[in-house]
Amino acid sequence: MHYPSLFLALSVLSLTQCSSLSIEECANSDWFALGLADGNRGTSAGQLNQYQKDCREFNLSVDTAQWKQGYQQGLASYCLPENGYRVGLAGESYYGVCSNNAFVERYNQGHQQYLTNKRLAEIADRLNAIDREISSLDGKINNLTDKADLLKQKNSLLNEKNQLLDERSRLRRPDMRFELRF
Image (cartoon, rainbow, N blue to C red; front, side):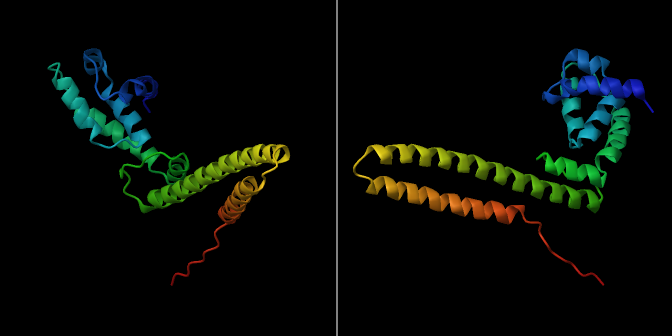
């Protein structure tokens, strides 16, 4: 195992977030470590083309073989099914770099849960906003003689709140699907 390379890959990680490499990075990069970091993140293999383009501007070359070796090793870790779920759950993009269907299946499960969690958070935010608006309207209703319009607004908000609460309940229920395979 290349522990010094792994350390360098992690330190170079912040450098590779930019679209271009500097002359120092092109001249001094540990291409295996950089490939390993890219593979561990599930970066598209097209990233190598960007490195080559960047370094060509300085008349420097990329050690393609070392980068590819590191990249493949990194992908071996990235493409594990349990990592697919983690990547999907975090809402991260997947660039189609894994050849096994188990990763993609788990990614899709994690991504679906991410979308559900995101929608639940949106519902919670809107419910809080509705409660604040209702409280504000209640205060106005108590201070005004013409309550009809404000009561309509309050009823509309209460209806929306009930619809969101129903949707939240549906989203929180486990999906009970059974698939029979022969």
